[in-house]
Amino acid sequence: MLTQLRKIKRVAKISSIFLLRFHGVVSEKENNMQLDEVKISKAIIETYNQKLVNNLDIDVAIVGGGPAGLCAGYYLAKQGKRVALFERKLSIGGGMWGGGIMFNEIVVQFKAKRLLDSFQIKTKLYEKGYYTSDAIECVSTLCSKAVKAGLTIFNLMSAEDILVKKSRVCGLVLNWTAVEMAKLHVDPITIRAKFVIDATGHAAEIVRLAERKSNIRLKTKTGMVIGERSMDADYAEALTIKNSKEICSGLYVAGMCANASFGGPRMGPIFGGMLLSGEKVARDLLKRL
Ligand code: 48F
Image (cartoon, rainbow, N blue to C red):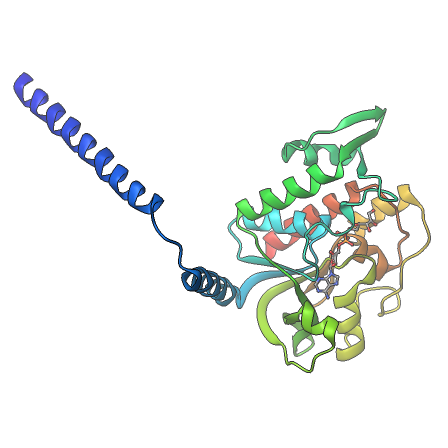
C-alpha cells in the first residue's frame, strides 16, 4: 500500500515537472513570436462578428449606457439573461462622467447608497442623508461589473428605429453612429429582443419613435410622451423609480427617460434615482422572462 502511494506521488511529481517545462517551452515560443498585422485584423473582425451574431436574438436590448441602462444591464446579466446594451457614443457612462457642471463628483441619497456599496464604489458622507462619490470610479466600476456579469456592450451604435409587430416593440433597428453623424445613406440592421429598455435619458428617443412612427398609445396620462418638467430633485428622484416600468407592450423606460416620458421633473446631478430605476426595471423584467 505504502509503495503504491509512493509510486503515485512520484508519477504526479514527474508529470507536474513535465507540464511546467512544456508550459515554459510554449510560453517562451509565444514570447518570441513575430506579430502578424493581418492576423491582428482577422482576430478583431472574427471576434466582433461572432459577438454581434450572438446578440441578434436576445432577451433584453437596452438603448443607452448611462447609469440607468448600465444598472439594468448588470442585474439582468447577473441572473443569466441574454442582454445587450447599445450606446451611441464612444464612451459608456452617459451624463455621469461630468458630475455637476463638470465637477466630477456625484451625490447619492441614503436610499441608493446600498447600491454603490454593493458595487464596492466608495462613498463619503457629506451631511446626514447626502453621500458623494467620485464620478469616474462610479462609471468605470459600474461598467466593469456589468460586463463581468455578462452584459454585452456595443458602443458607437445608435438605435435609429424599433422593430414592431402587432403594436408590440420586439427589437431594435441599429446603425453605426458614424453613419448617422455623416448622414450617409446606409441601411441599418435589425435585432430581435423579448423586451427593449429605453434608457436614453432626457431625449426618450425610443419611446418617441414608438409614439411617432408606430402610433402606439403609451401608458401615460395622455397616451403620448408628456415631456420633462423643471427641476424638483426630491420629487423627481422618487418619481423616477415609480415611472420606471412598461410604457407600451414590450418597451420599458428607465432613468431620466422615465420622467421625460411620464411628465416628471428633472433632478440634476443626484444619481440615486437612476441606479434604483435600473434595478427596478431589471427586477420587473426578471419576473417576466
Ligand atoms: O443621459 P444618460 O446618462 O441617461 P440616464 O441613465 O441618466 C441621466 C443622468 O445622466 C442625468 C440626470 C441625473 O440626475 O438627470 O442626466 O437616464 O445616458 C443616456 C445614454 O443614452 C445614449 C446617450 O449617448 C447616453 O450615453 N443614447 C441616447 N439615444 C441613443 C443612445 C440612441 N438612439 N442609441 C444609442 N444610444
